[in-house]
Image (cartoon, rainbow, N blue to C red; front, side):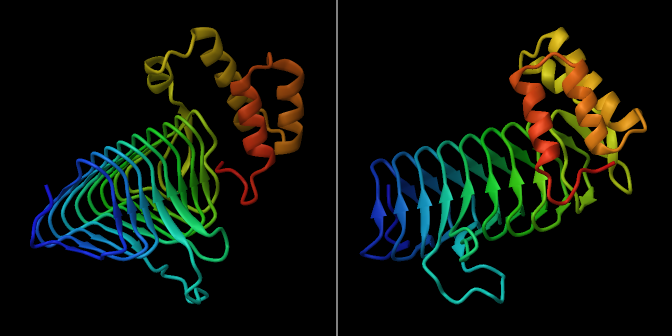
Length: 255
């Protein structure tokens, strides 16, 4: 299962049933779990931590040092969860002193040419389209769909169940459950199809829709809109998540 043409540092830890193709490079201080498939010309560098059941396509680089001039060689990691598909030429950089690690969760699809910068956090069950570039310390919550060639500014956050239009670029946060697109980027409605596919009830979808009617169409500022939401929309974990997301947004939400 391990090609003699691969280089594996003797201090690297490799789990069971791992397939490693020719010309793979695995550095020291690397831990790889079970049942992974690592195709040719993949580089897994110092500080990488890879879970179980991942498939990593040719040319991917996991654990390269951050593209951050403040990085001073501190001990940091790039952590990949379980059952991810990481396509050709994806790059996942190590963390910096800011957070200490870059994290990609489980059951994600990162398409060709995706870049995950230092200290970024990608949740679970996300789809990230070809050539999307994530700057440092971004956060993508679970079940988000980010289309191709999206540019994410440093420190931005994308909420769960978001659908982001291809070619978008943004420097503010994208609240959960919505579709975002156009140029400049803007709120385009809630992700009704995605929510129905994930089993959201019609009542809950209507409540989410009403929240965003208040936030985006009432003419109120954000604080006033959130107070109106709290007073008028039945509480649920999903509604509380929206409120928390908007209240805690440091960069502000897209309009």
